[in-house]
Image 1 (cartoon, one colour):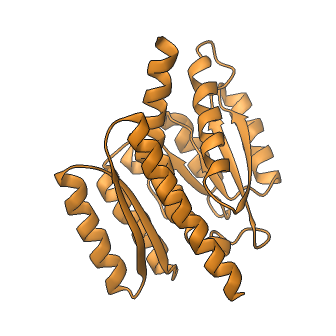
Image 2 (tube, helix red, strand yellow):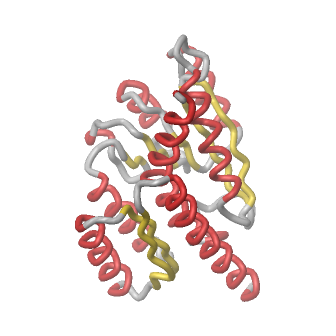
Length: 230
């Protein structure tokens, strides 16, 4: 019973925060974050996987990894790194940099998120963290534990400023999401870009999975169009 509750909670968190962000990013296809080649993105999941209460973190990391691998035709090399202690975090950051990682997902806590943000300055790495400290937010650091609406606008503006043309939106049903979707749609179209698909979901695992599948298929369609034009 507890495991089922955790699984539903994790699916909800992933669908509300990580998958919409990364699906928007993937709509940019082969040019996203200047990966080393035209078809591969390296993603690091940075969580306390060896701490005393690490079971939740390991489940969380596994679900993120599965979700990323199932959501696009773009090849992703997803690796999980440990942030349980300062020493392990330092070792993980060295390995992440050595592996020429494009995106870091995590960490959760502000102190470690600050350490990671400082480390990646001047490097071609983007971090998406669930820390609730807005001070951490920078050009390549997105803080999604605080003011998700403003952060969603910020990441959309980032892609628009870098001339990405195709976008997909995945949002929970509700008046706030409808208002946010209108703002984002207007911003995207004003910049001459295309909102290829917008999908809303309810707070049930079945509906979340259905909505994610629809957006995932949209990503694949955009990738197919991009492939046929090259």
